[in-house]
Image 1: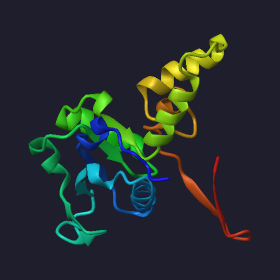
Image 2 (image 1 turned 180 degrees about the vertical axis):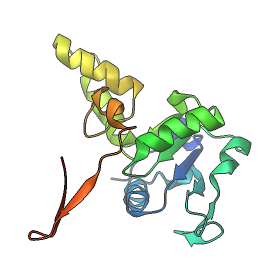
Image 3 (image 1 turned 60 degrees about the vertical axis):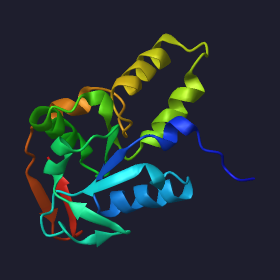
Image 4 (image 1 turned 45 degrees about the vertical axis):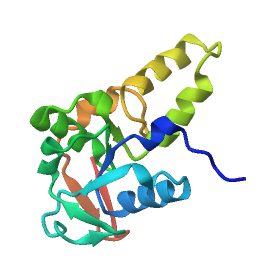
Amino acid sequence: MEKMKNMDTLQNKWIIWGTGKKGQELYDYLLERDDLINVIEVVDSDENKWGTIWNGYVIKRPEIIKETTFDKLIIAMALWRQVYRFVMQHYGIPPEKIENHHFQQREDLLNFYNNRENSIEIERQIDYIRRVPLDIFNDSFPEKYLEINFEIYLDESAQMYYVN
């Protein structure tokens, strides 16, 4: 059965920020869901990638965000929170226009819990997920650790990194 697209979705204009591993995972996911039609631009922080081709898109510098009309900026990076704060502070992008690479799963999760009788704890978590992109930890506590620089050590015998 062929997937039918919502006409509102076809009119969305998305920018993807990130062309690394997470960006490729997002691209593959959007391709599978037939949602690439919405992607109008691709940007990356790595200036060595600017002007190169990635999956048929010319990678551009992030500053084009200021000049482009779009509905959603999708941050496709493991460390998306830093970029999330950066684009709000430096480009004035409102948080409701910024997502991370889990935005479709977030939408599915919110739809699942919509109009259900949920416990107070689940409602608290769902409220947070409505306001902030989906992540491993869906609560505000990781944000207090963003500015801390941890010293990373190498355990030579195990050849593994660790922090105290």
